[in-house]
Length: 278
Image (cartoon, rainbow, N blue to C red; front, side, top):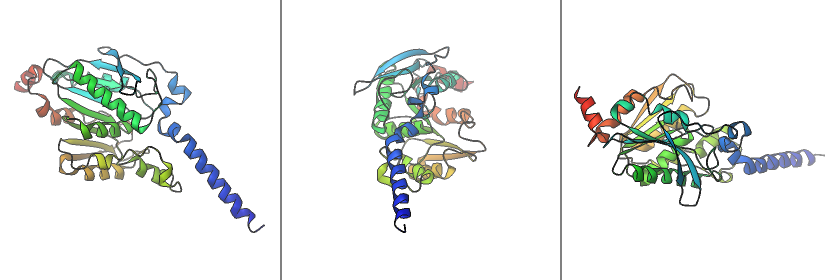
């Protein structure tokens, strides 16, 4: 009997770890697996057009595109793990972005409504790269601002590691998914996690401006993870801490963000030049 209880406990822990290993991507990417989220058809906000984007590994992504004014820049936006691209696409069509001629491309990751495939860290980064190439194709020479919320911030950072950009606008980001998982599931061994999203390593020594926005009452991603990311980015980063949660902060600093990234975006942009002169 003395050995039975420890063996049972070991068995329960092993079963829990196996279950976590098998279901981890369903937990990380709920928008690709949960029926309630999958059943919602992609929405196309007025002022955008739906586009199909091919990835290097053969997937087809749903995207929402609005061309910039001649010579102006584009916001390339990546949504959170249980979200969709339409809210961000609509947001970047409005003030203050519209007045300065910004365009926007917001995509649905592989496996999410409107897109083919199954999500993974490698896959989402490939999606981000494909979206970047699509912007370059549709608006040759336009500056690109990389924006992301939550998991999307990790995608933006990954794309920014290897692609020229105007800056990173990150809302409710984490320094690494591995760190977040350690906080949520402290008993799980690190090697169990297949997708780690080490944004802290990818953003290290950033040269382009970085604006990080995080809420004091975020129940999903603790504020300290955003602080760690800002520290990793170095002097290029500014962290703005707001009273709010994981979602309520979205767009709160858009006016400040547009002004922060505008100087790098306005070369050749008649709309921005005229607006700035008034």
